[in-house]
Picture 1 (cartoon, rainbow, N blue to C red):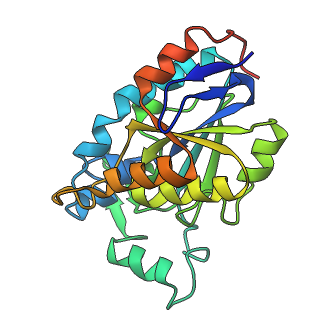
Picture 2 (cartoon, helix red, strand yellow):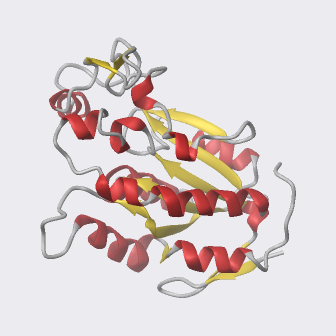
Length: 238
């Protein structure tokens, strides 16, 4: 049974059983002081602010029978999937310290944006549950050289609800690729964040919201989604 979510540019009807919540890069490297962003001097406060509303959305989504998909930006230990020596993806990430050995908060060895380390773990407040999907990605879009599309099709998903960081980079890149694959995309403005351009008259976050609601999907907030899910059928997780 479908439920309707208040959104811009118009309300969106979704069936929770055909809907997945995409949690983009809510990991220590982007949200913890000792992670990549914190070490590079980027402001992690906007990302930290979306943890609480995202947790509420995930709780409600699980109760409604939605699929939860976590995306994690992370590379192989030898950086073999980051691109060749002159690949922009590798060059830009090297400037932010990718691959560097660092001390995790518990004093154990870790590495910036490397798989199977503290740095790329999902923050504890949003820890995945056993039935959730957790998927690595090595480019900004979660669809690039991953099984994301196949997994969504296997779950018969047609609607995607986007949360995560950062709005104008990995979130928007993944959402655009989803649009190209004919998914209906709904972004939650208070569950996404962007440190880049915070000092501008109009932030990158706001610019992404505008282009998404105009051309690539729908935009709403967590309160509107939670209100809609109160009237949605409650089903057990698949």
